[in-house]
Amino acid sequence: MMESEAEARRFCAERTDAAGLARLERLAVLLGEENERQNLVSTASLQSIWQRHFADSLQLLDHVPRGTSDWLDLGSGAGFPGLALAAAAPESRFVLVESRKRRVDWLNRAAAELALENCRVIGARLENVESLPAAVIVARAFAPLVKLLRLSARFSTPATVWLLPKGRSAAQEWAEQPNEVQKMFHVEQSATDSGGGILVGRGVPSLP
Image (cartoon, rainbow, N blue to C red; front, side, top):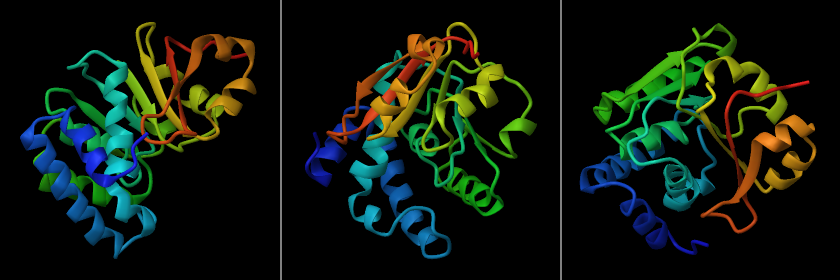
C-alpha cells in the first residue's frame, strides 16, 4: 500500500503522461482554492491529495483496457474519480453526472481551466439524465449498491464494466447483496488503502 505522497505521485505518473501529470498538479491547486469557497473534500485530505484522491481515482484505469472510452461517473461531487480520470486519460471520453449546482459549477470551471475536451458535465439528477450506453460506470460514495444499480441499469450493456470504490465497506456490502448481484460483482483490493476494496462487475444488473 502507498505510504507517501511521493509514492502516490509515482503511481499516477505510471498511468498518464507528463501533460496528464501537469493537469493533475493544476487540479490540486484549483481544488485547494475552491475548497475555501465550498466544502468539496475534507481539509485534512488535501494534505494527501495524491493518495486520497488522485491515485485512488487512477487505479480504476487498471481494470479496463487502456483507451477504453465512454465512462459514466455518477455523483461526481468534487470530481473524483471522473475529473481526475479525464485529466489523466485524454484519449477517453467521460460524462460526469452531478445534481448539486455549486458542484456542477465547480466541475465545469475545472474542466474548462484544464482544457478537458474529453469531459462533459451533466447537471441533473440521474433519474432525469437521458439514457446513453456506457462502457464503464464508476461511482464513489454515490448510493448503496442495489439503489445505485436500479438507478443506473439503463446505462449499461452486457459489456459494461462497473467500478465502484467502496472503501472499507466493500466486502461487507458485497456479502449483503442478493445472489444475482453477488454473481455479477467481485471485490478487488484497493491500491491506496489496505482495508479498502472496489466492487468490480460486468453486464446489465438483474435485480429481484
